[in-house]
Image 1 (cartoon, rainbow, N blue to C red):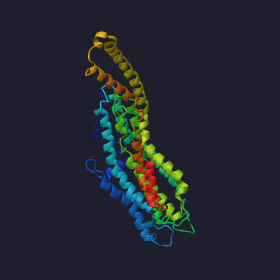
Image 2: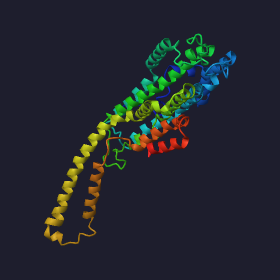
Image 3: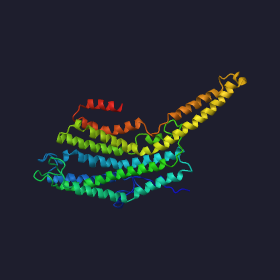
Length: 392
C-alpha cells in the first residue's frame, strides 16, 4: 500500500515559519477558522502604526507635503484590501486544490498502478509547504532588498514616508515603521504565495508523469482533464490581489506624478500576460501526456474503424445473400455512424487542458481593477467599450 496523506491533513497554504509563529501566539487555531483574527492582526501590525505615527507627526492630511498618508491610497489598498484578500484566499485555494486532486480519483485517472506516484506528489507538496528553507530564502531576499532600497526615495515628491524636502532620503517615523515592518511583512506574504504557486506547479508536473488514465473520447475534448482549466483557477484570487496593487500604484502615479497611461500600455500588457501565465503555466505539464493520448487514440480508433468497416463491407456489400436483406433499421448502420462520431471526437481532442474561456476569465479578473485607473484619463464608457472589444 502506497503511503498517503488524507485530505484533512493536506494543504499548500498551512505551513512555514509565519504559520507556526501565528499558531504560537494564538492568532491561528488549526481547529477553528481564523481568517478574521489574522486580518485584524496584520492590519494592527502593518497599517494602524502607520496611521497613528502619521497623525502624531502631522503627515496624515494637507500638511505641507505632496503626498500625505491618507491620500496615498496604495498603502491602504496594500494593507486593508490585498492582505485580507490573500488571507481569505487561503481557505478558498485549499478547497479548490483538494477538489481538483479528488477529481483525478473520482474520474478514474488514478489507478492501482499509478497511485504511488499520485500520493508521492501530495506528500512532497506537503513537505515543501512545511519546509522552513523556503522561508529562510524569502527572508534573505527581503533583507537584501531592505539594505539596497531602505534609503532610496523613488519619487521626486515629499511624502508621509519621506517628508523632508531638504533631505529626501530621510524617513519619518511612519516611514521607518513602513520600511522595517509593514513592507517586509507584506513582501513576505507575497513571496509565500509565489512559493505556493511553485509547489502547486511542481505537484501538477509530478501528477502529469503518473501515466494517467486519459480518455481521448471524453466530451471535454481534453481527455477528461478539462476540469483543470475550469474557471476560476486556484490562483485567480492571488492574481486579483496583484492587479489591485498594480492598479493602485498606477493610479497614484497618474494623480501625483502626471503619468500618461498611453505611454505605459506595454507594461500593462506585460502584467496581464504574467497574470495569465500564473494561472495557466502550471497546466503546461499535461500537454505532453495529452498529446501522447491523442496520437494513440487516433491510431487505436482508426484501426477499430477499419476493422468495423471491413466487417460491414463483407456483410452488406460482398455477401450477396445478406445484401438482399433490408439494411434500414439494422443496428449495423447505426454502429457505423456511432464509431465514426467517436473517431471524430478523438481527432478534435486538444492537447491543452484549458480554453479561451479560461484565459478570458483570468484577463477579466486582471482588467477589472484597471478600469478605474483608465477612467482617470479616459471616459468610462470608452473604457468599457475597449474592454468588451478585448474580451469578446
